[in-house]
Image (cartoon, rainbow, N blue to C red; front, side, top):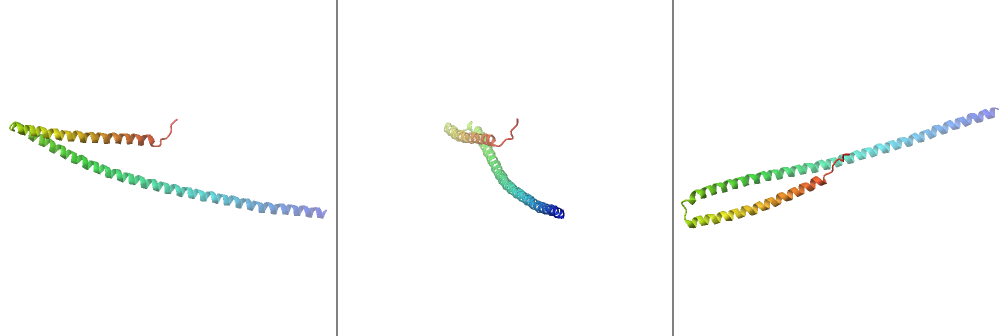
Length: 151
């Protein structure tokens, strides 16, 4: 009988020791898996931050370029206004001189005006074509921009 009790006690002790050892291995595996998951999360967050920094840098570069283009456009507009004002003043001066000018001078003035008008029309066509290209590019960018789907 003592042998049976001793055997039962030994069996219970062996089971308890095995359970305790197995429990430590399971917890060690869980801890290791949790550490791996945290490491993966940290790596993913760092990758996201790097991607965000890259996008912010590109966005800032695009803003800088847009500011530069806007500045150049404002200068072009100012130059164009100044040229238009000079042309208007020249035409007003010529109109005032027509009544006292000779027939040959009037013909020369008319010829010069036709030449200037032709150059203006040519430049206008170029500007209109560039504006059309800008609209086409804008529409392509709008169409290609990612959109949040609505249902």
